[in-house]
Length: 97
Image 1 (cartoon, helix red, strand yellow):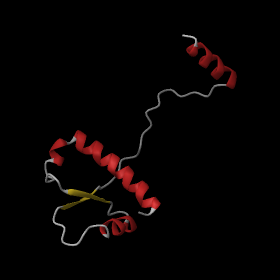
Image 2 (cartoon, one colour):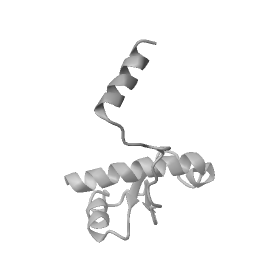
Image 3 (tube, rainbow, N blue to C red):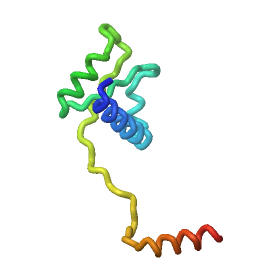
Image 4 (cartoon, helix red, strand yellow):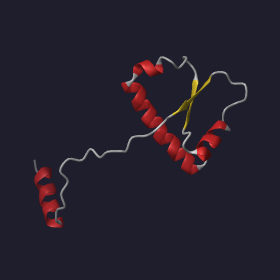
């Protein structure tokens, strides 16, 4: 698999897994044992590449257009820039506890 498409597929797989975890009724639409192929119809190259991997006549493959991805949000809270000395001091305090 093309490296760029592999990275994209991995990202879509993670997001799809999160989605079905939060929306279990969606996963009920997928037959047990089906092969799920994630497509992004906004990315013609990726979609074309993925469609080439579907075995002809395989009726056990479910195609899912992932639709639109929401922006990735950071989970950081209150980051701050600190000096090297402050970092060392903080590390030393925590390592002695």
